[in-house]
Image 1: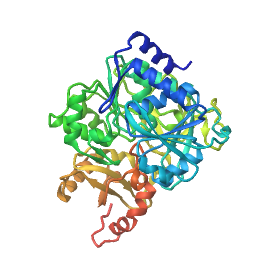
Image 2: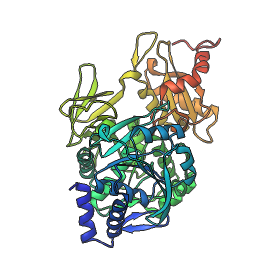
Image 3: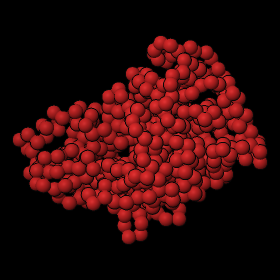
Image 4: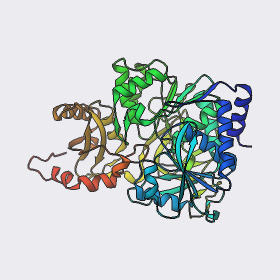
Length: 495
C-alpha cells in the first residue's frame, strides 16, 4: 500500500472529522476525503488512464487519490496549454477518461469521446470517456507530467509512485510539516511541484489543504494577479505553508511591505529561477520565512532545499535525503535517486545512472548547492567573457520596478535585456533600477540597454514554462529586431 493511501487511511480512522481540504464553497474531512475517493475509484472501473483538466479544488484531490487507489496512470492537463496541446497530451498518453470543469471544452477534444455530467466533492463536473488503448508505453507510470513547450508538442515525463512518495517524504521532513499546517496551493495543481508539495506532503503530514479557485485568489491566466483580492484571500485563509515562483514572491514581499499579509506563514518555498541573496533577506526581514529550493520534473520536482534547520541565503539548500548529487568536470549538476521512469514513448531511464540536469552549479564547503545557470544558456560575449544570464537576471528581478527580465548578449560587446516593468513603473524608474543593478555587477556583466516587453512572459504566449522560467528562444524570436537595433544605433554603448 502506498504511503499516501496509508496516511489517508490513518487520518480518516484517527481524526475522521478534522478538516482535510478547504475549497471555495466546500470542505472535506479526512473521512469524507477517504469515502469520496473510494466511491470515485469504484465508479471509474475499468479506466486505465485518468486525465484531470480542472482548476484547483477539492475535486482535484479526490480524483488524484482515486487514481492512486485504482493503480492507474493519472495525467494532469494544464489549463494554460492551448487546445492543440491538450488534445496532443490526451492522445499521446492514451487517456481514456477525463474529468473536467468546463463543459464547453468537450467539443474541442476531438471525436470518440462520450460525455456525461457527474458530481464530485460537491462540484458539478463533466466526465469524458472513450475506448481504452494499449497502455504498454506507460510502463507502470502512476503519473505523467507534461512539460510545456513553445510548440504544440509537450513531452510526457513518466513518474513512479515510489519515487514521488520518496520526494514528498523528504519535503515533509525538510519543511517540518505537521498536522497544524494549512498548506495553500497558489499555482495550478497540474504543475508537478504543486501536486507533490501542496497535496502529497500535507496528506503525509495530516495538514489541511487549502485549494481556493484561481478566481478567488485574484489570479487570471498565467501572469495577471489582483493584489488586493489575493491579500484579502490570504487574510481569510491564513495559510502557514505555500510554494511560489520568484515573481509571486515579489508580489508577496510587496504586500508584506505594505502591511497587507497575514502573520501566519511558517514556510514559504521558492523555486523556478535564481533568487539573489538580497531578495531572500528582504523577504525574511518583512516576516516571510523564505526557503529557496531546486529541482526538475525528471527528478520528481525537488532535489535540494533550504530548511529551518539549515539555510543559506545565496544557495538553493542542501541535497534532500532521497537524492545523490555530484558535479561534473564542466560544472553540470548530476543527480540520482527517485528519478523518472523515462519519457513517454522512449526507453526506460536506468535508475542507477546519474541524470544530467543541464544546470551549472557547485557545492560549497558546508554542502549547500549553488546554481549558476543553465548550461545551454551560457553567453560568450564578443570579448570572450562567459556569463550565465541568470546571474544579472536575478539582480534585475530584485528591483521592485522590474517584473520580469531576460538577458541576451551572445557574441555581442555588452549585454542587453527584455524587461517587463512592474505596474506603475515608468521608463525613468526602470532606468534608475537598471543603474542600481549595474552598480552591483562587474563591468562585463552589466546590462547597458533594454527593450520593454509588450506583455508578460507566460505559458499562454509560449514565452515561459509552467513554473515561470523564461523560454529564451521564443522571447528572442519576438524581440530580435528591437534587440539588434540597440547595438546599431548612433549612441550604441561601448563596453
